[in-house]
Amino acid sequence: ELRIHSNPSLRGTIPTELGQMTNAIVLTLRQNAHTGTLPTTIALLTKLTMLDLQANEFTGTIPTVFGLLAELDELWLSSNQLRGKIWSEVGMLTHLRVLNLENNILTGTIPTELGFSTALTILDLMSNQLTSTIPVEINLLTDMVDLAFRNNIITGSISTEFG
Image 1 (cartoon, rainbow, N blue to C red):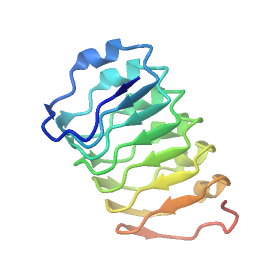
Image 2 (cartoon, helix red, strand yellow):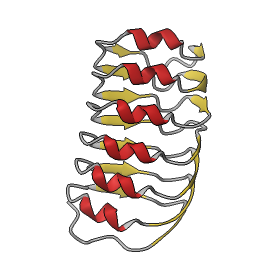
Image 3 (cartoon, rainbow, N blue to C red):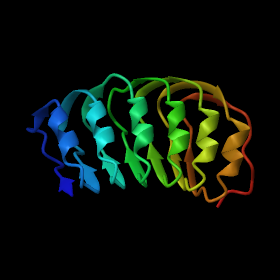
């Protein structure tokens, strides 16, 4: 378990060697001043249940290989400068309960594959640049208790069966 947070003097990129910590279960590097892109070698940490990289200065896209983190329960990438689309491989994360991508610069649509992440209870996509209709597959997320889309251009309806 590696938890380093709330240290704004901790700067720079995440070293790719981090992927060698193959027994890591929790990786928290939140509220620092990390920059650069998210290293794809994080996908080598196949035992991760929580990945928390929120409130840094990461840029680039979310690596699609994060879809290989099959044990992932929580993914916190909010408050960075991540761009691009929400990757469709997120639907492969069937244990995922929390997905927080709030306050980035994500564009495009909400992937229909999110409906396959049926364990999701918290989905926060607030304050991005998403332009989408809510996919009907979102209605498959019957354990949802917190669903946040505001400050995007999102249309459509949601089932009243949540939570």
